[in-house]
Length: 66
Ligand SMILES: [Zn+2]
View (cartoon, rainbow, N blue to C red):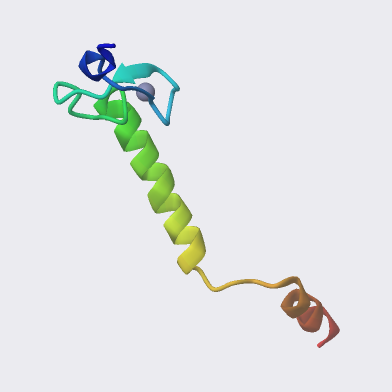
């Protein structure tokens, strides 16, 4: 078996393109800088949502009653 000589295949999390996990793939696990930036943007957007004050349905109901 020469499995160790086969580079590991990973899917780009953004566009699902298969790439080899090799040093030449500088944007791995992404296939390109573009996909890496897209994912980074989504991550920042998620973080923004989390850091925003939580609006709970109960609070909204309370405000309606006041
Ligand atoms: Zn991609």
